[in-house]
Image (cartoon, rainbow, N blue to C red; front, side, top):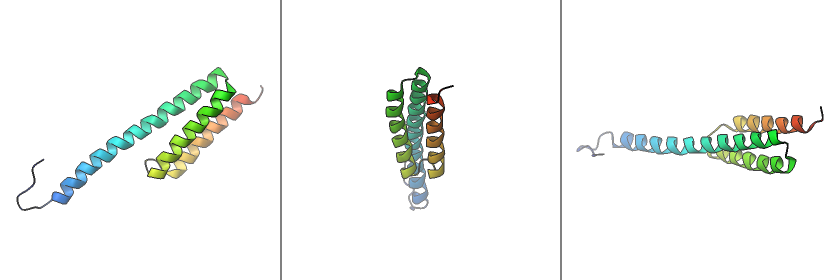
Length: 95
């Protein structure tokens, strides 16, 4: 990445580099959320209540941290946590 001789657009070049770094980081955080949610739903299918509650705490924490950093919107985080908790309540309820 060569600097321009006159110094024009150097701020724009730096902003582009930062955007690439942030996008890469955010993609990793979203992947972590998806993997944690997938593990949680797998535990729901097995019916292990202890493991399910432990994994809900993990998923909830990951989602909240992502929302705190601005990776996902806080309302998206709340909606995701609500749906996961609702799924656990539905599964725990006797048929």
